[in-house]
Length: 173
Length: 131
Image 1 (cartoon, rainbow over the protein chains, first blue to last red):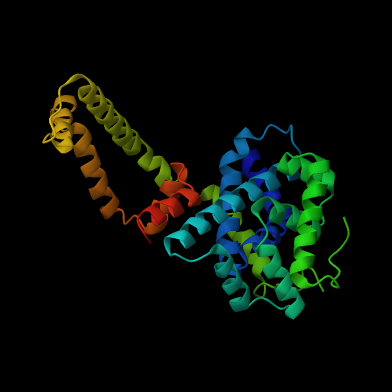
Image 2 (tube, rainbow over the protein chains, first blue to last red):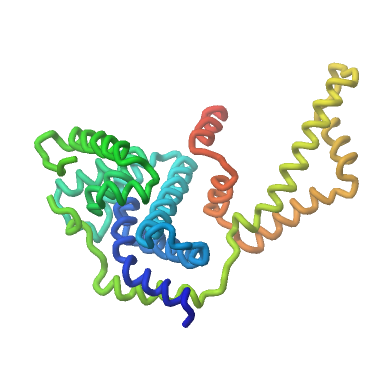
């Protein structure tokens, strides 16, 4: 086993589960998350020779994961447009029919509200709320200033709160 | 309201996932559909641009009667620019190759996205077509 393979296996061991949960929040389906995680790790493997260590390994892995997930979402939007359906309706259908969704009605409503957020706000909300990533790390992953991320998260929170009803607590800024 | 407990995975999923992922380095390298289609797309695009430019120049310089048919110009230019039909044959070969390789609608979607088409553009086209 050469160095690249050893490093790749370390990345798999260290990050595969985190990447899976991150992706799963976006795609709202276990099967699609599984496929996408494999695509992401294939990309990581092919891009590994270009990893120069300037960025932290964690940041680099997450950056690939978020980019691939956004590409998947764009493909899904085009697929939905070709079927003359909306991506929002498709995501709702996935949440309702997911056999591995184990939450209550409030969790389901939250997932649906998050799925309706615009791309960038959804990305920020998932990284901050579900992945509990500090703003400084998010800033490196998304290449956006901390201030802009805080503003984006605040707007996303407001939209989610308004979709759920203002009495539901979904964390603070 | 829980955060992660609301979604689950099949039993033993992550052990299985790590096993599958660790086999990636042993897989043969595959060329993606987009990369396979890129040369054909480039040929088609340059051919189309050449025909459109030629058509525009001819329309500006030659006297055009009302009966003149644009397609006659296009055919004429296609013959002039591509006498042995090489570019058209490449496109034809691509069609056969696509059929043989069983390219799916997903491949076409990937190709359209890689080629820069946006959802807004698709919607616009649908609107233009009256869908």
